[in-house]
Length: 421
Image 1: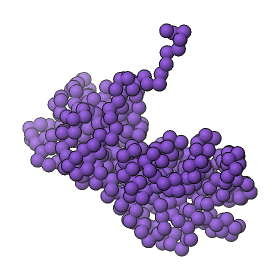
Image 2: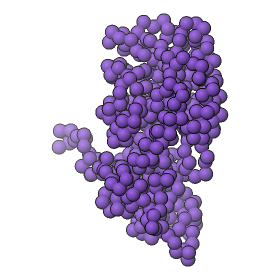
Image 3: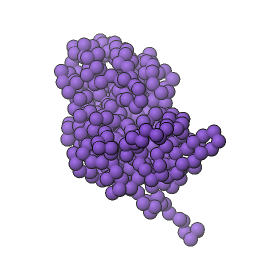
Image 4: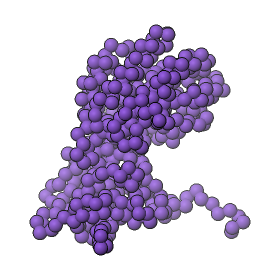
């Protein structure tokens, strides 16, 4: 994360000290680097220069409007999984013809919204969904452009919760059923087949699962050509991992070198759906130390950020590096085995467990690294905690791109009925 670094004993994002931002907006807060976002997107986009392609950013990783507008200006499309994400994409200025809609449970209203918005395609994940899209499109007197999402039964070698390409997964149509489902789709009056889609999981740290799954899909593309179903778009999904601790995930250039020889002969456009690879290391969470607590068997560092702000450690037992904002150079200080925990009333509320760290004093700031993906986008108001602000840093300036919620925001939309007045 080169845009996040120590300088003269203070931790900076680009040319702005994190302490300055924390003093202005309070803690906890999310801070993103404009330079990192641009570099990561451009790295992915340029890696596939020799192949006709679309980079459809996976909005679920981080859906802030300012970040989406930044990517839209770079020519990004969007991979969406809900009507709300479609609304965000359109509000941010992403062109409808660069939007693809995935997800196993699209409602009629969401299908209708997508068709009315004239997005590029819907990725179909079951026979039932295919028939529902055909029905809704018929009611609207239009044709729905679709790609069928195929489950290639490839182990992505990642956390079970973010594995999507195995037979037992809820996602996609089984490879054994793929040809039959395409045949069915070709008979439906209000369906236009334009593509094939596959996505096998997130935080992939090897190229081989991408290659193995793509080879399976390419065999299907050949079979479809043989029965007169030409494919205009081949959506190879996303999932490229980032470094949280000691992982050495492939770079976009590595992925391009591995798959380019397999697809260069195709007469179709490739779609990629990176999310974490673009925003994961573009963001951090800043939190303040509140208290020390020492039990006979455990030391706790209690901070003001919690599982409702950053869920990944509690949900996935995920590792995020944690550093002091003020660089500690006191050689007399010893590292202590501790848990870094928040104020939420759950034993599962932690940012780190059994971590060897320097015992930072109350009032000092900590920075939780690699928090740009699935950080704020998974945040909640659990324990009636207002959600935290998001800040975008560009060179020597910072901009509040989402304000801190207030207590009044917690009850906005709730109503006490007349009989309780």
